[in-house]
Image 1 (cartoon, rainbow, N blue to C red):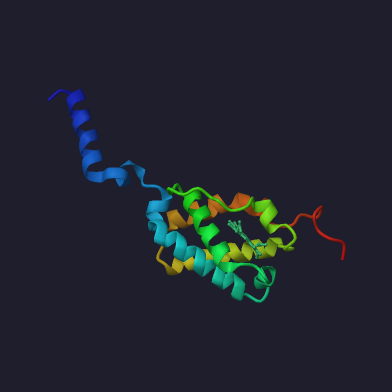
Image 2 (cartoon, rainbow, N blue to C red; image 1 turned 30 degrees about the vertical axis):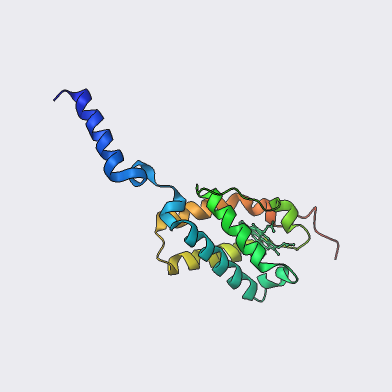
Length: 148
Ligand code: HEM
């Protein structure tokens, strides 16, 4: 068999047998798809809200909406079939006096939750790396902070 035919055959075999996984499954798929997005989002929000320090930002907010929008956002970020339909991150978080410690507290909560779910190290790191740049849109900078 000539090398070109052999290469074509192996590509066809890869597509037929491996499907998207062999071609490189999205982080969304590797994390467990839509049900994983919803469960990660709901559990994370419940834990953050139950925390005596981080929870104070959520007084009077609509938790079911936050959970739904966060699941959608995680889905889009990780390459899933969703489009985030919530409000822009800076606008949503402005005025809630969210500190850098709050942000890292949430990241730590997410890290713990992923470990409990048995998420692989690669997937965990990929997800945390996608969320890290959002810090600037969530944490209140000195310019936005109110005078004491
Ligand atoms: C990467 C980190 C974060 C992401 C991706 C994120 C994402 C979101 C999303 C999608 C919403 C709902 C948007 C909407 O209603 O349209 C939301 C709302 C909210 N988030 Fe975050 N968030 C993050 C970090 C934090 C942290 C660290 C806190 C505080 C501890 C926080 C507090 C809140 C609050 C209080 C709301 C409700 C705002 C309102 O309805 O007035 N978030 N967040």
